[in-house]
Image 1 (tube, rainbow, N blue to C red):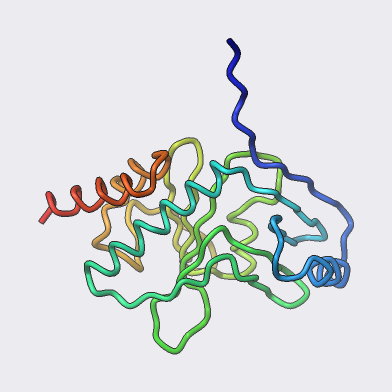
Image 2 (image 1 turned 180 degrees about the vertical axis):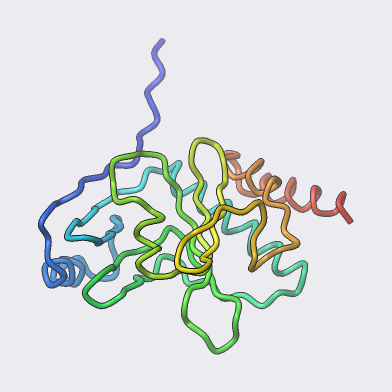
Length: 192
């Protein structure tokens, strides 16, 4: 008996694309679509995320939201709303959040990197000066903070400093979200 390989993210990068070309393509696709776009340096990445990709980013997001609710931290989900710096960068993160009332600007983005060869995630967000970027790659969660014009890798979040990221990493790729939240909550309880 053979076991089918799990589908992976499908990604294509187009070279020599202008800002106007990116905007036209983005508008042509509209709001309801199954692909994510990233535009930077005249390159357009078109990615169709796999089920595993979506599962990991959702698990991480659910843990952030549960943590914030438990700790009574204000948060607003921005999801994969398009982020743009006119003429320079544009695209959708896997998940994004802000932690300030009255703001609709993302402060934290989450990216799941299961494939290589697309637009470099940190370079993309460097062009947006995103305050904090979390990247799930190779079974690890890496946290980058914007500091003096570049990203610095950190062991903890500046925005959620009390959140033990090793617990988030431990459960990010678990197959069942309800079990993720049960185990995450139990791990938080045991730390108090």
